[in-house]
Image (cartoon, rainbow, N blue to C red):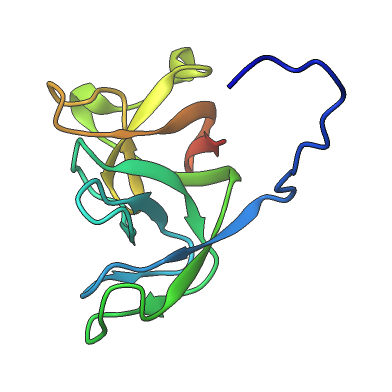
Length: 137
C-alpha cells in the first residue's frame, strides 16, 4: 500500500477493556492474569508457557471447562494491578521498576524468564510489601 497523500479517518479502539473468546476447556478467575494462547489464539489463564502473550487482568470469573472454543468470552482490562511476588532468586525488588517481569502463574510474577520458559507479564510499575504492581499495555 502506498503512503498517504491526504488525511485519513483512522478507526480507533478506545478504552482499556477488551472482550476475548475463551479457549475450550479453559477457566479464568476474576483478578487473574489472562493470556492469548499461542496455539489457539484464544484467552486462557496466565501460566508459564513461553509462547503465550499476557494481555491483562480478567474482570470476572469465566468458566469454559465444558465448552467449545469461543463458546464464551472474558473481559480483560489493561492497566496497573498488584500481583504476588515470587521468591528467592526470582523475588522482584524496587530495582526492577520499569523492567519486564514474568509470569509464574495467573497471580504471581517473577524477576526472570527462567531461561526462556516464562512469558513476559508486563512492566514492573512498583513494588510494596503486598506484592508487585504490574502494568499491562
